[in-house]
Length: 320
Ligand code: MTE
Image (cartoon, rainbow, N blue to C red; front, side, top):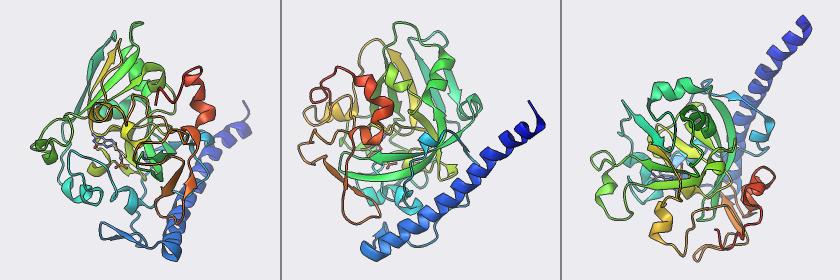
């Protein structure tokens, strides 16, 4: 390879990265401006117009442009002050305050079940396993609101490959920490604790399924699922389990928190599907946080080209 080619390879990703950084900053300002013009609001007393952007660190490196939808990223203040994290409170505007002192020192993730190399990872192991990438994903809650979030992390497939799934493994079950002294709303019975989620192994191995440890170039804050969570952009928000301590590969479909809570309302799959309404929320449209009006919801949240083949031949009205 000639020197010229080498230089080109070295320089181009860096330039793309800087451009994207500028785009991110522009996105924040644009989101703020849209909010002033039409739907100005504070979330949790935090002014969405304030320059709340934390210092951007080089947490993730850019990957393929397919991971960066050409959409305005949601304001950092909204992503970190409008949350669902029932272990702390059911009040979306209250999660940031209720989780503020949550300590993740010494965090461990036990990965086992039908694997050849079961292993307990600490956060240094997790960070060392693969380079972090930045992925800008659409995020769609079944409550019909949405955001665009710049995550940092790597494909869950990298962690799963490291433990070598056995041929009998068909599903991946995950669990959030259970510790009512640190997650005070676990003293209530609002959900069955610990929060559990699950995916088919092929869904979990899909490159879009992200093991996220950061957002907006920072480590994940407690309210967004520190120190590690799933970001699976073609599924509703409830499938994005936070503060994971256990991952188990299984032969059979594992129970999931929201399907246990309301089996007629929440299925195992939780794929974004504008044609299948939730009994309480139409799924045809969504409110993008920071915007006025509503957007049409897209099948698989706009990721159909990447993931629809995982569900070929399945009746998505039955498997919701
Ligand atoms: N994970 C745990 N452990 N506990 C929760 O209450 N809520 C889910 C999901 N993961 C939840 C969770 C729901 S309903 C949504 S919409 C998303 O987290 C919200 O993620 P966010 O607060 O980062 O936007």
